[in-house]
Length: 198
Image (tube, rainbow, N blue to C red):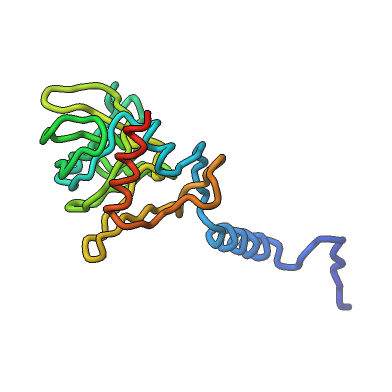
């Protein structure tokens, strides 16, 4: 006599295999979702950034070093110190002095912390940054980038253009016409004009 096993509603003959397959499908679906963007409060037009910033500098990245926040490893926070050599101060700052920019996230040993929406800096990169002063340390003022990635423009030297990357930032309060790419000379003129209008 042949015995037939009846499955109830929602049952599957290969239940363990089916559960595994569903988990894999869920992971694949989650991996294909777009990355979450950090939300930053705007506006982030040139005049607003200039008014909010303590300093604006056209500079070159000359160093990067990641380390633990105050409190060491027990703080659980990693920061990257980016050292900039100014080309020209457009607002605030001190002539010729190197600048330290403190950016959340980085790598220490085998541990990497990533923070959405922060400015990324590459060695040798030429930038224009809108800075908020955090304090001083021996030989340098320490700043943070105003409005995270929205306060940093990369200078494309071949075309003499300044370009801003909004790809990992969602801006609440930003206007539709805020420019993310413009000639470096025009950006400089707008910052100077906005800075003198205060």
